[in-house]
Amino acid sequence: KAGIKSIDDIVSLDEISEMDVQQSEAKFSIPDLDESKLEKLPIHRSIAATLSYIGDALFFANQIKTSLKYYWKSLEILKKLSIDKDGTPSEEIAASYNNIGATLNRLGFSAAAICYFEEALDIYHAIYGKNSNVIHEDIASTLSNLAGAVGSIGGRTDDVIQYLLKALVVQIKLHGDGKRHGVHPTIATTYNK
Image (tube, rainbow, N blue to C red; front, side, top):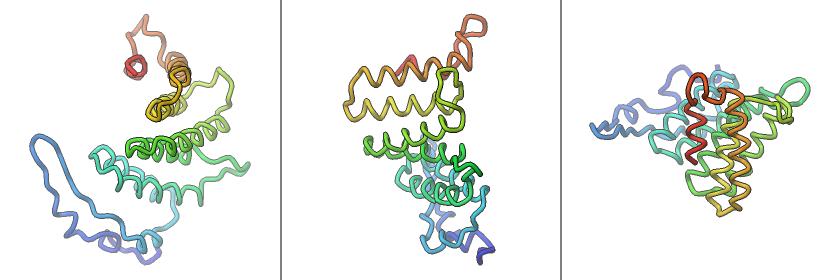
């Protein structure tokens, strides 16, 4: 489809083979996708997912700016095909907004990140409902990320705590209070923020 027959049509394998792995910390370099070649990518959910996975790998390899390009392209594709019949964006779009928000926050653009986190929350609430009984890990994660971004811009401590408490309530509903099986790691992480 769309004239792409191999990975060479997107990136040069010579550039990828130049990976530098050090014993103490794995570092690698992946070339940016050529913008003109990005436009030729098929509009398909699996392509968007793969772009997002590449963004994740780059994010965790501390190649934050490059990861953002992959997240944005993934979101662009998802927007073209993931609108439900009733007009509600999909979970994948919400996850993309959350990923972009986390990336922007890490780059120091916390005010912009807040907008992406709020958009993700709006979509999750449209999908799952907004009442206090809604329990979903993605909502808890987004609330926690939102708290971090609000804290990064020097937002009110009360707002940060409210977002974290909302995340904590969702996590406890999901994973229990720890009395029978111990505290779930996501609950411990929220306590530590």
